[in-house]
Amino acid sequence: MEITFILPGIFVSGGVIVVLEYANRLTERGHKVNIAYPCPPLKWYNIKSRIGRILRKIGFLPKVDWFKVEANLIGIPTSHGECPCEERIPKADLLIATWWKTAYWVANYNENKGRKCYFIQHYEIWGGPEEQVNETYTLPLRKIVISTWLKKIIEEKFKVLTYGPAFNGVNLDVFYRDPYHDFSLHNPIRIGMMYHTAIWKGIKDGVKAFEIARKKHPDIQMVLFGVNRGKDIPDYAEFHENPSQDNLRKIYNSLDIFIMPSHTEGFGLPPMEAMACGVACILTNVGAVPDYAVHGETALVSPPKQPEELAKNLIYLLDNQEKRKKIAKAGCNYIKQFTWERSIKQLEEILKKILQEKDIWKL
Picture 1 (tube, rainbow, N blue to C red):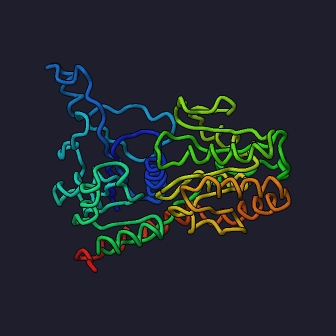
Picture 2: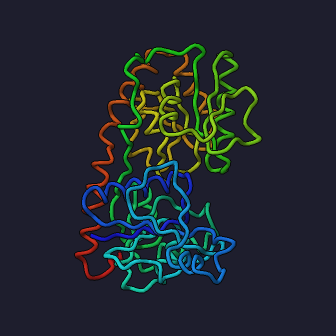
Picture 3: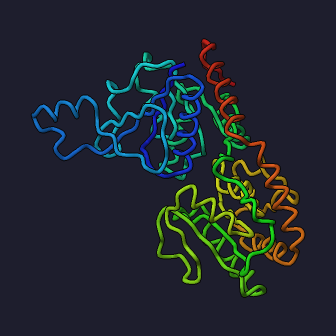
């Protein structure tokens, strides 16, 4: 198969990383994979010169130094927010949107660019005007979802059939428990979270839960990591800015408990990574959490937007070290079934099925 993914850009985010993982692994399996995305035009892009004509022809490809990409990258210079030029999109068997804006782009491209699909990684009303985002789920694109809750919401709310879910995987070659760690507590006890400025990531809830727990366990240490350092990061927190994947594994291995306090999620990769590194996880019941976490066995799960419940679970694990260790070990073993090898087989079968079908299904 020849497959073209349309990304909104190349930047560090869970959704982009998932697409790059799939693109690499599809390439390894013998498929020809393109990743097309808009990039800023060069200031001298329109200069009437030989170099200008060359740049106009080949586009401008920013270096992706944070992820090794095996697929064919196609950077298409555009003004901010504009649809990449159709002429630069190669003909393929499948053309796949990956974000609500890219769904409109794909819907408007010529049919000879490939059978049109929509790889849905979140209910993205947080990322744009709700009416416009909702409309994308009714566009004549074949919808592929990554979690059970997304399948339910897209099919029930918009009355269209979806393919999947094709669950995300965790890279066990990158994220694993260091062999010299025996699940014993660190001193001080280290509580980790991924930092993000988006309100729906629930960071304020996570901080509140930590501060409630700290009243009973004053020596616990908060450990945060994220792409950028925000002004609302507590002074007492240890912060790691934009860590590499190798450094992120070391951070996870330095933790005793990991908290994901999100109000909503498409999937949620960090808890899977933390579990693979042998960290006991406290999660909110959002996104794909029910697909990869078993409450009381492989993680503790709380309702979203209730920091007091997060705090109860955190205090429970701090007070019950054997339970914390048991959950950490069980989570580490359980998450190993969520491999990218399994995920790529799921997606590959879905794409083959789409190519074999004639008409778009509707409920």
